[in-house]
Image 1 (cartoon, rainbow, N blue to C red):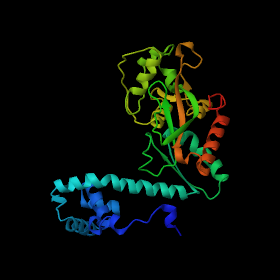
Image 2 (cartoon, helix red, strand yellow):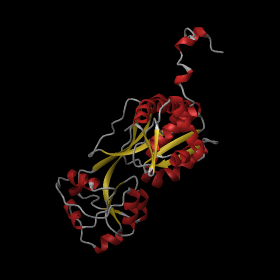
Image 3 (cartoon, one colour):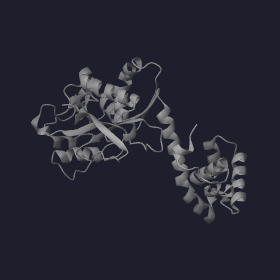
Image 4 (tube, helix red, strand yellow):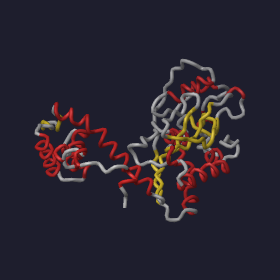
Length: 330
């Protein structure tokens, strides 16, 4: 039992909000969902409720507040002026309740690990090694979700994030509530299939790549930054945009052009002869562009047992598999 002395004086009834000022929470959730999603049907789907139930909750809110909050239109539901004012003031409070609840759930979890990870790392390394960690932690429930961008830790159920940052383009700037440690540094290199290189013009220096079919992700920035490292500026780039690195790699394997990747991701392709690192051993291709894989987690959960165990396993196993790369303890 919680004593009054442990928490201070018990609040008097006069200091609590009046019952009239706090509407039923289910009705409040329905109003918030409609306001955010812009429609009763979309809110009903999100809340897993019947359309009519959500409509009744909205009527309850409007009766409770004595004001019209939602305007029904042929194209959907929109907030009235009063509804917009009210939602702007309650949205942050609802987010705060949701975030605190997720954190409470996480603190009580000892057998679930939610991982966000760069798609390439997830596909080419993590998926084939994770069984080892699971084998040594029986009964563990692991979810791995590939994601190109850093998730919102406060809004999503995320324990660990594995990010890749090219040091020549940006730095990993984290807010105080997040902490990171580098997993490995790896050169960023152009790669192509033997089939492609056999039928195309030879490449003796980085500028020669401009005569070839370059494969891009969502934009031309990665290749442009790579050329800048080699003091080649203001280049006019063309080529297909495939949005994700594992798609550019697969296209390169099929002899359709040259992709940018890194030695960790391409290790097995190099060993099997599916891809060749262009410029390997050629001084004209130095210095290398460098990318760093980072392990990211919330600061206040950094040393929680499961996150600590996974971090130790990840860093140790990557260092074992890639001794030629730079690691945190080097």
